[in-house]
Length: 178
Image 1 (cartoon, one colour):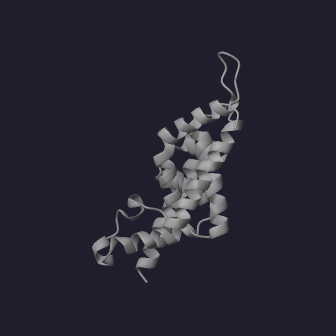
Image 2 (cartoon, helix red, strand yellow):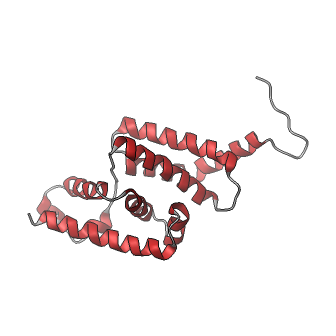
Image 3 (tube, one colour):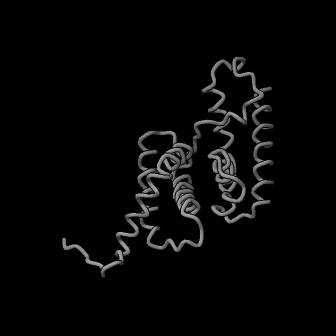
């Protein structure tokens, strides 16, 4: 395969994309791994999802025009891939949901894993946009960043996060009392 030579002082689009992709993997690689874990619990399918996310991010960088931050672009692509994966797999998991179970007596439920599985089950039943919003929130993004990824307004995001947390907490406690 022949190398493509660029004019002096100008990199080829492929080199720009490769450099951007290296930046993405350095800055957001761990977050993409957590995102894949949030959407897929089964290790083999999680690796496939993460590989699909990376491939899609790399391909999408050819279209990255810097109208939004690289972080927003990467999260948008990653969440679109993961949402498509959810539709195909109909399976969702998340690793840490401390905030939603903070007032639950975990010892009374015997096993923290059981608590987490129950909360994950509740998240699975949310509508896709609600799942996306709560996962981004749990990943540490603020309302503005979530709005850039989802296309919702920041105030709509903040309202949804509040409602989703309330709904999940309420449903969790309803099931605990049965």
